[in-house]
Image (cartoon, rainbow, N blue to C red; front, side):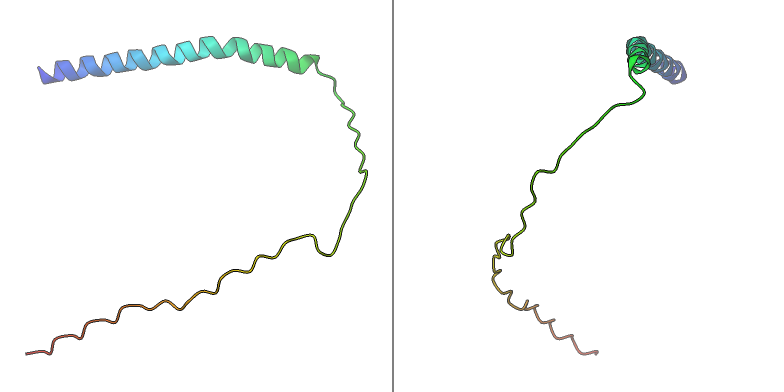
Length: 85
């Protein structure tokens, strides 16, 4: 009885997985076709122009923020061990 229930569960899971893959492919394939068409319609070369207008550098650009000094970390001392009997 358990074998039959397990095999039905696995078969239904496989059908659900196959259905999900088919649905994803059905949605994705038209989008891939549109992307390939857009890529074919693009020019092979693009022109890019830019201009650097001004570069200003000064000695005091940054603000220095002093950090508070750290104190030494004090670790707890280990408890003295018991003497062997």
